[in-house]
Length: 282
Image: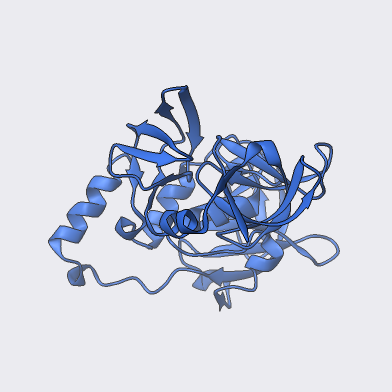
């Protein structure tokens, strides 16, 4: 088996081995994949390490890694929490987006493909992130006003399922890549009135297929990617656009992905301090 890592800001994953084919997802800096098939010297079909999503990527946009590096990078990394922040090598800066990975990061530097990088932005180790509704909403709000882009997973362009996947990935919860698959995860919430902040609401098109998802916020609001990442009103019919005075999406179901939150008094003072320091930017 052969494995690769994304060594640049963002790499498109396409539906077929052509630059003209549809972008179906993206690899962000530091994310890894397994090579399943090669087409000449130019294209490889990959399976993404995080969500098992399969698509085609241009070979020159990837860097080969060994199986031992794959295991190491899975175990030792930090997430970038800045919208866009450079990592610096001898060759110059590489801007990396929110949610990119810093393999073997030690708080100041890391190595990738034999190159040493310095990073002075806000990084957080997965074990220091608390999977709570409050944290999910804070992360989701970081993407506000990001433009909609089919297949996108970064603040420079993102779709609705990419948005929910990235937020929960930062919380250590694995979601599938597409809304039609995400809707099969988690626990069903029977009524809008029973929904809680951090739940995901799924919406169907005219053919009855789930093709849109958003995160429920307090006060009957929802954060989702539609034209841009935005906040609209949610009720039992669906998403209501106040500016256009119409419903834009029909509600299908609400699912709860977050685990039961630990009681505050069960957290040690040290844990609370660590989380507070990591996320004081919020």
